[in-house]
Length: 214
Length: 209
Image: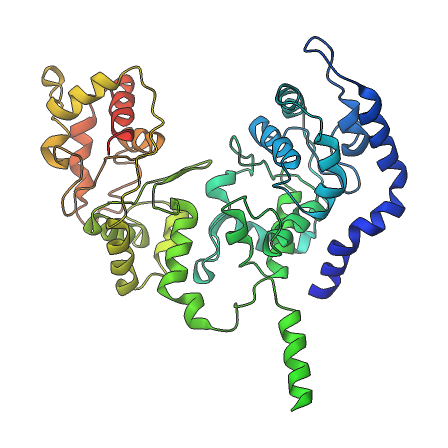
């Protein structure tokens, strides 16, 4: 189980190059031809929605950004740009997408997408929902896993730089939780320390539960 | 022997995420692991952390107060579902060791309270409000707000945490009615405070070293 998921995660960038080359080309084209922007010009929203979905609800491997907290979005754009966020898809897509992003534009994107309504992905394993909810709310005290609810909130709505998780896609949530334990994005304390104590089954349960939250 | 080594390698390769869940039980459940668990939420130096909820500063806190509160969580005299789960697995020896550890920490206060009424906060802390019969905080919590025995340290506490505590006496603590709770004194102590006065006190304390 574990080996299979590793295989998918680590090898994904290479597969992605083949499977999603069209999307990647479109993104690249959009970034190249957008040109410099003055503050008065409209934000090039389509640079984001090519991949994240036309209503920013997430699409394929790109997570939902609609309704995410403004501070988290802005911080994320900076952490892609400064390469602190170093998981494979970040490197492949977001490093390039943010290379020429200035602080003002990052702020504008974050403000825009945080205001969009968000739909739950509802794509987890419903059989794991209760287990995920228990871990989310109570943690695993015997295993020294803290509860998620204290930082991410009762409806996983997030708080400022702490991201909204409720209704995000199962695959994205699972991948992120696994990648903390694999050493990616190590600067994002305390998540690496928290997630590395989770088993694959617990990660699946958490990602499932969260995917159903409205 | 080679077969065993092969089997071990497979086990090692398939359990990297929670590598020590089933091995090295001592390190997993030992004091260091529990301490790291506390600090995940309460800060690496015990300075507290503001997530969706506020995780209070524990650094410099009176050990007797921490032990009292963890017992109160565990016995549901202080109602907090998250801390119930945390507290009820702690042995008395671990609890005492954790309390002693946090007492010795001394990171700078994280501050963060609004600054417009700090002078009012200082006045209430040092002198109380004679006109509304509010005693000085310093009378019990000490001139430097360091606390004593079961009376908690307040200096450097997170602004939103103190603010909520001040307006929440009797709703979270002292529940069940089976045993006295030292926090009962805070109900009459604070009940004449306005929201602005509570905010001023909480802000003042958030900057106190």
